[in-house]
Amino acid sequence: MEQLELVRSAAEGDQDSFRELVKMLEPTVASTVIGMLGNCQEAADIGQETFIRFYKALKNFRGDSDVKTYVTRIAINLSLNEIKRQKRRRVLFAFDSEMSDKGSEDVNFKNQEIMNSVQNALTQLKPKFRSVVVLRLIDGYSVRETGEILGIPEGTVLSRFARAQKRLKKILSPLVKGLL
Image 1 (tube, rainbow, N blue to C red):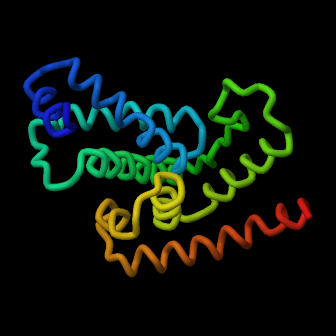
Image 2: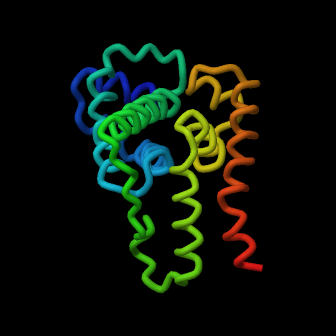
Image 3: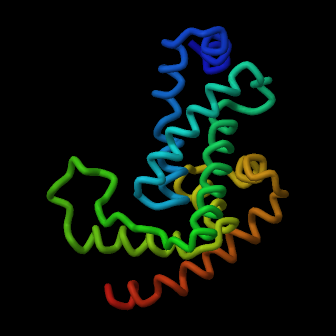
């Protein structure tokens, strides 16, 4: 069944259709939220809240954008709200050093250290830059799609991405020097 048909069925109360949508969209939501917040309990909560909000909005979904784009926008907005909430409470991001792929226990310590450093570097970016990096590099959206999701012009996407790259390079340069 096509995504739009699944949305219509789910909006009419078909739980199986909604489960199918969640199954299809869960990897995108997870990568977006983890990219924004890090692999922490808040990310899991925001992922669940994304689908709750999506479910509540099913009847209002007009189909102007792709379902994946719509749900990603919800995930980004909720993640940004969580970041603001954490700042107000002056809570620093708690980084879970455990990699998201728990199935591979033979992961090299050095690779895990690199992954942790990259994730930590992402959390040091301002949310407006982090969201562009997550959408472009982690979720694989084009410049146009990223602009559409964030509601900003393509030029702004490109400039934020360039500034984020420059900042990440500065943050990660000691790590790169340590590997050489």
